[in-house]
Amino acid sequence: MKNLNGKVAIVTGGTRDIGRSCSIKLAKQGAKVVVNFHSNKKAGEETVAAIEKAGGTAILVKGDMTKKADVDNLVAETRKAFGGDIHILVNNVGGLVARKKLAEMDEEFFNHVMSLNMNSTFLATQAVVPHMPHGSSIINLASLAGRDGGGGGASAYATSKGAVVTFTRSMAKELGPDGIRVNALCPGMIDTTFHDTFTPDAARRGVEASVPLRRQGHPDDCADTVVYLASDSSSYITGTNIDINGGMAFS
Image (cartoon, rainbow, N blue to C red; front, side, top):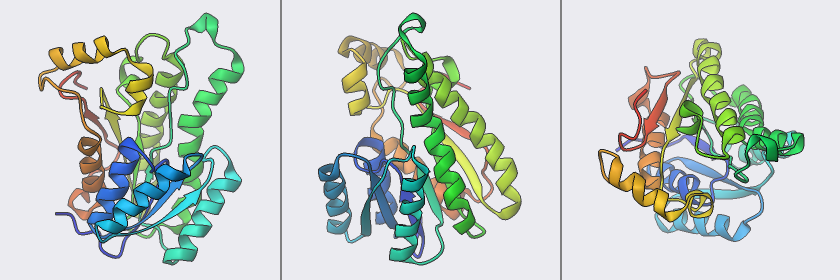
């Protein structure tokens, strides 16, 4: 058990899949959680309800994390609800958007994917850090795609997640002297609506058959690592990009 009593956590895109699991598990360990959503308010309300049912504390805040004004409002609402300090930031917002090869992409599409995955991480980090005391933790959601280039038609996504990997290392160096740790997760095949939408079932079954652990990951596999990285149990870990892929690839 990781004691997060008295901590305040923001989870961007915290309404479903990995974000929902992170929100719930952080709350179960005692953190007061701010669940951010963009468009699916119902899913956000369900996440907050699950937290409250488990005895936790959470609020729901709408916002597009690619927009600075919305990010600033998220931080303001967090401080209004739970006080001045923010101890944990989980940069979970992101997505593939669509599978497009080089010839199929235009500049607008490429910029949108980069903004969704990288700009959102940058904006949230920049807005939250001034309110983070010594001992705080930032956890970014990168991807195995950021390490290996991704699957077919995922070059923009993979590039953006590779940027998150590098940004994580840069921020670990920059913020370390202030006692703020910065780490990232690089999930592989996790059983989420992401893969329901973008990955054929045959490909998912192929992963299950080939990885050493012989299964897809579960959002909780990621959330448990987020809780660890948010806690004092990982107080000497920073700048890491942790692979969560069942042995699909090693770094």
